Length: 244
Ligand code: PXP
Image (cartoon, rainbow, N blue to C red; front, side):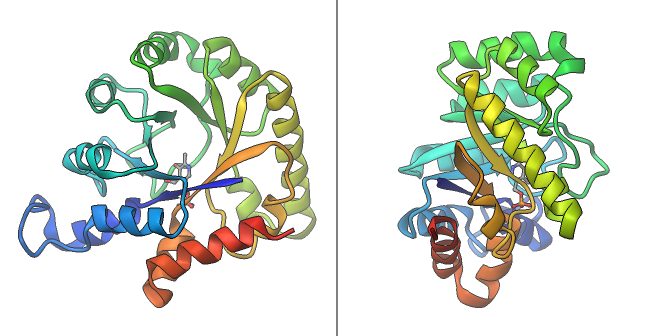
């Protein structure tokens, strides 16, 4: 299992003070420095979400990360013309298409690939033609997996939010849904990733799932980094992921 660190919330902290001034000499914390630390600590990739409202990551961050990081760049984005054009200029290694709603605090549900086939198809094709690998951030449902596969996505990211928010037997039921989805997606030849709400406790259950190649984790790592430093926080998560 590889780790992609989502560094959106490094930018959230910067934007709390330096809206519109990310090039100011005193604008901090530096998103690029965070990415470099993640890579040094053993992360396999850097993930950012360029939201339509630019509440955290800014366009310039994405272009700079593209130039500077040495692992891979995974751009999370809504399926809109504006962000698609930016993605085609940035050419990240991977794009993960996510649903986006301006009022949400964070991405709430999975992308409804079944219901949006016509809107997704041309944009998935354009990204793939540009050499970008495409992933769909979906609920762990066979219908959504089948539709993503039919669209030509190479990867899926299973939404682990319902699992992360549930407790006890409900959480185990969500874990079983994730397991079934991972096995089904793998049988179709899709790369299976997962993310959302994964933390230092629930990773003990997530790491037992079959066929998961990559986890994208943000909030819990950035939160721990406030106390331990970023490098420790990433190393701790990697150690937790790789425990037998
Ligand atoms: N994967 C996707 C597609 C996301 O939208 C997010 C949240 O930005 C994450 C992973 C990371 O979630 P978290 O911050 O809860 O670890």
